[in-house]
Length: 154
Image (cartoon, rainbow, N blue to C red; front, side):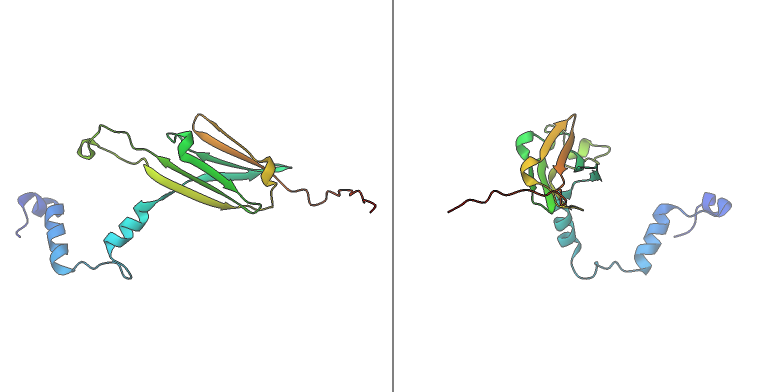
């Protein structure tokens, strides 16, 4: 393809011309190990939830943004060593995909498992949600605590 007058004067190359040259010289390859459609399906199956995790003197606190998630679509499960948060954010209905200019928000199922830096008391966990911010407070196990036990006489 012959360069235009503008391209000859400025030394630029049009994107259309450049992309055609590129496609002709380098054949497209699929990613190694799996096809692109398989990779895309795996990635779109479930999203990962972003979290903040910090500690206070007596507890570990996990915070996550869950705005747009109905409380019945959100679950938190706790063991002494880890916390799993699962949920589903329903996409708004009534807007066709072709009408979007930007579509960056994540819609669909998500989950996150967090390994805890210390063991926690699973019976005393508190979870609250306010203005879309989920806060989970997990009391640390007091390993230095000594408990006296009564001995029963038989």
